[in-house]
Length: 181
Image: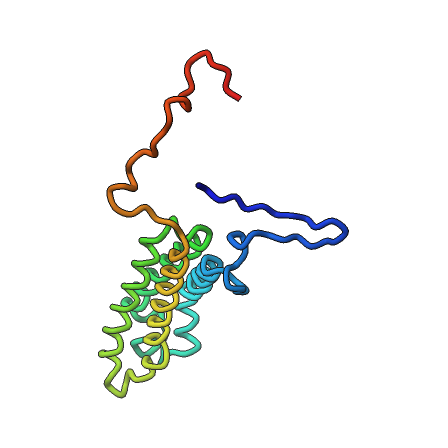
């Protein structure tokens, strides 16, 4: 039976009480869904700032010497991450509708950070172990964890029985011409 959330305004007070399903369970300040939305917006905005980060902290974000625009590789990476940033900002409005994009961001960040961690072992690139490498692992852990956490409380259909129609009683059938109220 579906549950109904009821908000009650107590007489003689200005307090509004809600059912537990409508509030953050466990007294959390923010729900997992809201935290996921916030993380998507923050990481999306950060991805839009990859170019300025390379100017401010080149040893942590740029893999070449000189100005960021002097590297065709870096400009390609900027283009990819700016595009991903725009899509993450869009996903922040409705994360559940963009699950595959979020999982792509999680796993591509793990792969990218893993490759960069190995490549940053020479002394010339060790600054990346304090910059973009942990940043991408952080993106993966936070988005993956929040997505799983936000889905944990939602009911999901499982198995073939989820596609079966609910049983009905013949008296519930509405016949043409009958008065339905």
